[in-house]
Length: 212
Figure 1 (cartoon, rainbow, N blue to C red):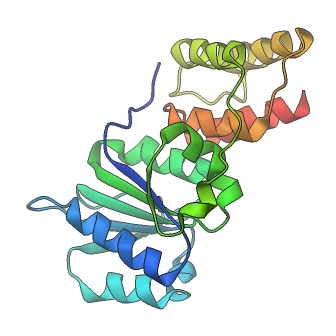
Figure 2 (tube, one colour; figure 1 turned 120 degrees about the vertical axis):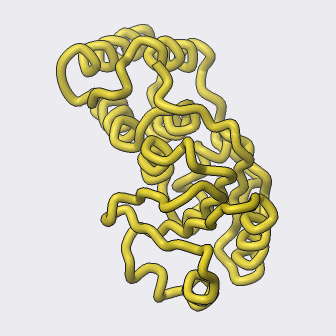
Figure 3 (tube, helix red, strand yellow; figure 1 turned 180 degrees about the horizontal axis):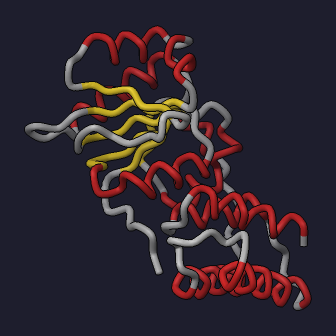
């Protein structure tokens, strides 16, 4: 069962001042009447470390700032600018807020960290496009089909750290491993986030793959 579907526009931007301004403009262009722009950072102090973002949040009444540690719940519908998340952060945020997201723009701090997710969602590219000249390798079709099957059978309202859900995931991964298929944890996590898995379950998916 899918936890959410990403039917809204998605963009990714490089970590430089010009790209950040472009990302802000991209979010503003996707606003509708009554919308609010939400800026996400992992911690509150992360915002203060970037003058462009902090001025954007402080300068407009219809711009909110949320943090992962604060629960990440958005105040109203509208575009979202996520600054420097990893794929699991994206998955966790969308799990709770996907029905309020008008558009999503992700600012990349470390391109390699989110490259598997970018490979899957194929977002619009803002700023330095050379960061994405080389995307992650495609999953083996057999591995991807196994993930699709798990996506449809696992209850995404539950954690995959115990019980039926864990048995399904680990059993599937062990069968793939025994059959000679490589399990690249970051690729599996990126695929999972792009296909509706929560951030916590995507992290556990990666952990199981790396342990096996």
